Length: 355
Image 1 (tube, rainbow, N blue to C red):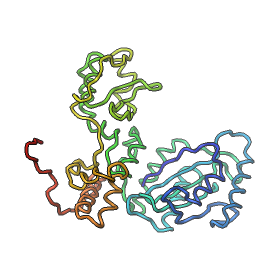
Image 2: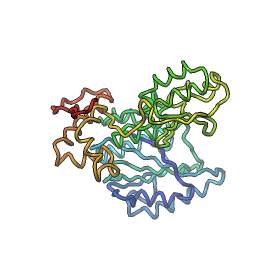
Image 3: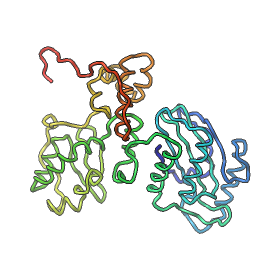
Image 4: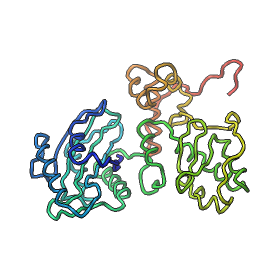
């Protein structure tokens, strides 16, 4: 599972967030289960309006803090996974306990009809008896550790790319890969991390470093207080120190001096490689199903995952690719992969063409 705090616009408030959770108005979403925790109003959806008034009254009794008293947690489960209601309620309670919010009022709803079954939890950060506001400290780490513990406790699928060892990863990129089964720009940079570090080590100036990384279709720019790698074709950016600490602003300027932007015009056609849409399993880039997805109506509108899930029931090639992709994800998560009987997935050489 993936558990993450979702940033809210301050203007939302307790009522708007609770109504969103209960209504599931996003396109393609639908409310599945709903309950209230620690609310005197009751515990069902019919008690929601009274519970909202109760939550807002509790928040009004805290006059000291000016911070947002609402905390929105989204817990997403692996593809095809939909835990029973008893498991879901235990997961909600365990996250509340881990965050120090066990006694606080909560609005909980699960949504279906999206790529991943997921649960929304709204916490009132103001305690209903002391009226003190509790803001969880280091909640990112708490959420990751608790998610790992709950996966073991309830036998849930492990989500690749989550945990203490990956705290420097771009979490949004990891979530995107989990939901689309396509490589992110962050994943592309991680794939070529070793080559980029070698360029850094060999370069003796900013100009040499710029020219070296241009071979991978990227450039480095100043952004805010640090540096970012930028995809020359799409403009996608990634914090440079996330790729490796040696690309931090301090370490690069210690080596090359104050930042100097690229002076020469870069010819993107000469790049050795560049970021492009690609399945997480690199073998499937040559699969017939991937090629077909890039033709006609499929190219822009569907992720690789959604394409496979939609086509697997009617197309043997898509069904085969779906099983191969699932097998690859099992390898990434440390599990023994299921054996898949496959056709030849290496493309045939066309006449007059070389690989």
